[in-house]
Image (cartoon, rainbow, N blue to C red):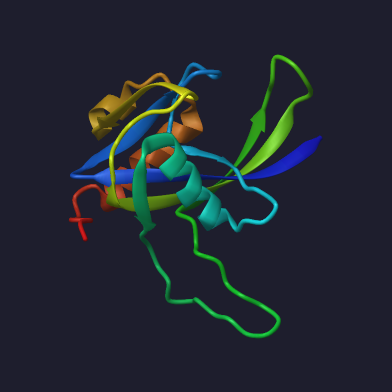
Length: 154
């Protein structure tokens, strides 16, 4: 089975989470996508969010273990790492290892793209009722519980 590293962002602003209605899947999801060969997961998460939403975002979370030397580097710690089996209508099922980051908005202008049919800010009550995957809902609600009430502005 093919295994892929993907990265996504839970964009939180004023107690709400930004979600996109994915054209192919037909479900509401956070922005994200495959990590390109030249990227680290955190870079892919930021790039995908900019491409899919028009927003420039910054990862929030614990950086206390950041380290760099000649042989090793620590990466930005994701909020969650989710293992997902992804069925496709055409082609074999494959596995995603999704590095999920929580981010705050730093700039840009909100807008959708060709991969989504909708984009909107949602509070936890809306996410609880949302037509999405169970793992997306669980991680999104956990992020809102942890970061939704804090001021994430610049």
